[in-house]
Image 1 (cartoon, rainbow, N blue to C red):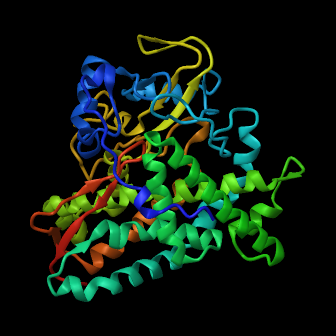
Image 2 (tube, rainbow, N blue to C red):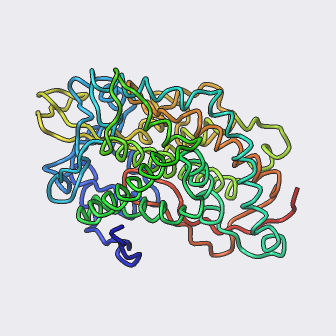
Length: 412
């Protein structure tokens, strides 16, 4: 293990944005705390914005049509990219299947689909329920005595971390390491050296786990991937480490963000909280709206040939950020797009992406959101933000609350 010091992973100051159309930055505190008016401004004035802060420049489409057009055209907008880094791109290698283009992509994704089928995911419901109950039991006495609980750090962060740990056969106690790595990757856009070291540390961690499973197989995803054959060939150790690294990051950060944002919304919208607790509103329908309204993931593409996004010309070699959260707020597709309507009936959101790379774990995420919210609402049917609460949000391409201080009243 390389042993990155926790003090190395600290918040970074970035120069303030001068003009969102030509100098946007997804790490600017205004974007981090409240990106919705920024996206609205872009859509109405410059639907495909640009910045020179990362790589050799990055384009940002903000409409539903433009984002999905990019996502659904892998021939022109390639997934074989290196993300972004301040001042220029940094080679980091590919993480299958998300960084693979056709024809390499389909065999890997197809081989992994059974792991995330509805039936397979449903088998994890008892574990999720036990985990949620255990987490709340750990702070229920303090909460019911009027103490402050952090709905993100004490609860939402642990549910996807504990679930993916169980699926992979990893120690639940390693969850604090998982979240530390994720935070380091969030800051990696502006600190590429930190990102490289985090990926190296994760690779070493998974390399050791792979060796352990080869010596003593278990009933877990790591063991299954070791024995998986794709077109007659088994994955080598480097491919295994990269697939597992992706599963860990994609399986935690994204759901943590939406689950935390959902609880934050209910803490600040008592009418929606009351409707869900009373059964007047349906939780599954509300979850789809939380996914739309607080979609957490943006992804990167590399342009392979000169092309057009909307009315904007882009060149081969350019980088594009697919802002799925902005697409989910497009008023041309969603009525009252900036209103969170937990009863919204027609909801064709793209919180899980679009095209061949649509989220492999969407079934798992939906179940985690349902069990996590259902358990919280049954145990705490009344709660609100703590007085003077400092709600903080993650910076970067994956957005979600990292601190949500709440006080509760009443218990199920």
